[in-house]
Amino acid sequence: MKLILNKENNFNRKVSIIGSGFVGASIAYALMLKGIAREIILVDAKKTSSLGEVLDIKHGIPYMGSAKIISGDYSDTQNSDLIIITAGRNRRPNEDRLSLASDNIKIVQNVIENLTPFYTRGVIMIVTNPVDIITKKVIEWTKLPKGYVFGTGCLLDSSRFTAKLSDFLKINTEVITAHVIGEHGKTQIPLWSKVVISGMPIDEYCSLMNILFTNVEKEQIATEVREMGTKIISYKDKTHYGIATAVCYLADAILNGRSTIASVSSISDGEFGITDVAISIPSVVGANGVERIIVERIDEEEFTALRESADYLKEFLQRINGKEEGNGIY
Ligand code: NAD
Image 1 (cartoon, helix red, strand yellow):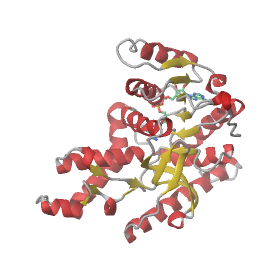
Image 2 (tube, protein in one colour):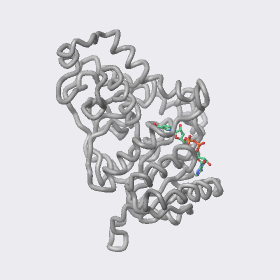
Image 3 (cartoon, rainbow, N blue to C red):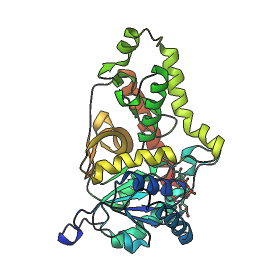
Image 4 (cartoon, helix red, strand yellow):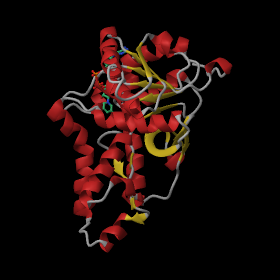
């Protein structure tokens, strides 16, 4: 893929969503309600699926929203400022995210091949699971400038972590800053050393407010956050509202010049001693995607766990790559 920047493709808050299943359609709906995009294109291998979603969403516009929304082909994605990839199948109950890899790699490879002839510019955000693996693959296939392709990674986990802390502390999420780092999956790490409540470290806040907060409470919160996706899937077979609003938050940063800091998945170039793997670390996200990975002082234990999470993803990638060459063990 090549970046082509000229007068004709000026910044116009155009978003293309590839895959209009539960996640893609929920993202389109949330973007519409929040007025974040000016134009939304839905593309799906099953044309009637995107057409049906567009008609449904469009019929709410008289009451709320103003964006132009169409069901399109890949040619309609030209000059998008943001391309969001959600195509792929979902996890089955009790299925690990990583076991989805083979099927979804093939689907997303097909999506990238179809997108490439029409790509001019725009950040590519990967949502399809296993998001860290797919993100790494898309970065390899597209060869776009660093940061232009990234995955939502632990963005949703961070949001769940914040929501859990809000319930535990009985305080609004707005005053809580909390990130989950590492793999979007079982080896994720809640970044306890950096959790702040209105700027105050959480231990200090809890002791001031007489809230019992020991390793037992920490472990319970961490487990619930880690298992949340599995729990929701066991109840309703899918998760889509949470990720849709989290994606909207990033879309706003990218499309409307509201740069933010979020724990998203991009290639580490030696940050925390990690290379050659897409993994979530708090990063500055703005018009050019991931603009900078933030290297801050974290606890020794968190540092070790982050390295282990990266090793786990690397090893999995090796197995997947081996399988593609016909001699893998996965
Ligand atoms: P879904 O089955 O409802 O939708 C997937 C859509 O992709 C379908 O409409 C299908 O027709 C389409 N599709 C399949 N192959 C395609 C192709 N080659 N080109 C274009 N479209 C194609 O699934 P969903 O619930 O919307 O989930 C989508 C993905 O998002 C899954 O991989 C799921 O695991 C992932 N997800 C990620 C997060 C996260 O935090 N990263 C959260 C929730 C879901």
